[in-house]
Image 1 (cartoon, rainbow, N blue to C red):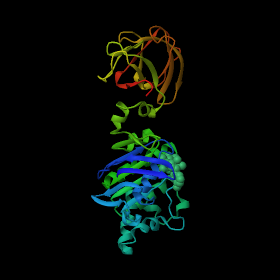
Image 2: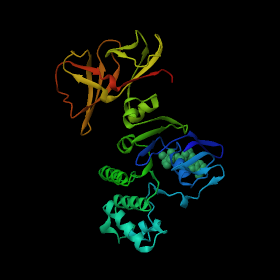
Image 3: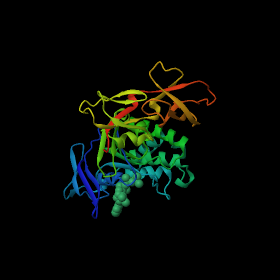
Image 4: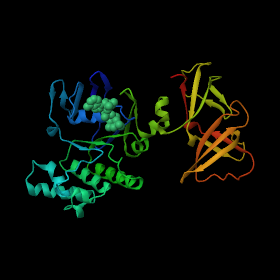
Amino acid sequence: MVGIHHAYGTTKVLNNISLTVPAGELVCLLGPSGCGKTTLLRIAAGLEQLQAGSVTIDETVIAEGAAQLPPEERRIGFMFQDYALFPHLSVLDNVIFGLFRQDRRTARARAMEMLDQVGMVQHAEKYPHMLSGGQQQRVALARALAPEPRLVLLDEPFSDLDTNMRARIRQQTLTVLKQNNVATLMVTHDPKEAMFMADRIKVLGDQGRILQSGRPADIYYKPTDEYVARLFGPMNMIDGVVEQGGLKSSFGTLALEDPTVVEGAAVRVLIRPEGIILSKGDDDGGAPVEILSAHLLGDSSIVRFKVRSGINSGSEFHLRMPGAFDLTEIGQIWARVDPRHAFQYPQNQ
Ligand SMILES: Nc1ncnc2c1ncn2[C@@H]1O[C@H](COP(=O)(O)OP(=O)(O)OP(=O)(O)O)[C@@H](O)[C@H]1O
Ligand SMILES: [Mg+2]
């Protein structure tokens, strides 16, 4: 997709979106509610009239200007949030539905092969209302992939499932998509889901613009702006002025990677909660802290603390650490910052 703009009436929704989904890869659009994710998928599918730009699949232009191929000729498979299985058709007939170009026997064999891939063969004769949400999702995936589409579009495909089911179905969906070596464009507003599923992530801002594109590790470790850094949850923030190439803090001088930042510039450093590490000694150059509270979340704990002395004394921070934190632990505790989890931006960005 190149140079896609879209407006509903006078409201601009998408602003110059270009993206490519290589065969066998999964590209994830990650963005807040209302930023235009579904609109972009509908344009790709041909369900929404293209207003500007072009859509190409395998080097064939399928939409540009007035020339727009109808949805059924685009060889694109869909799966939306509500799965939208046909309630009056059996599981098998739901999957056969998209295979109308094949004779009934070939179509049936192909549908059974796909149901086998998603582990639903034994439910082939059932009707959608007899299935759990996760099972319906698997049938919808089989239906989307059965006609061997050139591109699959997934719109928040796991949002109706509970936590455990979601984790299982995500893994299974990914396995089936990779087995079929299909290009997939998926939409989600859950950054962890995007990290798990995607080969590449495109972060969309609320202006309908792509803010950052990259592999999951780039988005997490090299967020190019404050908005992207904050996608993963609350951050610790230190504002200050650059002195001798860094920002002085109670945690020591936080070195600034960006060589263009000049002495005296006002900068903001954001530190991920998992980037602050506690210790019982100050050997690593940490700040002495007073623990305010600790909450066990299960696999990790959130610990709030105050810095006791130095530049940020009195300021409150929070960190995430594996396992439980024992509040009865006595003695002075120090905190230090892992520079891989600290990011610097100009202030008032
Ligand atoms: N048919 C329409 N007519 C007018 N406005 C629309 C139409 N469809 C969507 N919009 C508006 O366009 C914007 C983008 O909608 P879209 O459904 O693409 O967002 P989204 O990113 O998918 O959001 P969500 O995460 O909530 O699903 C929203 O402000 C929405 O209200
Ligand atoms: Mg949507």
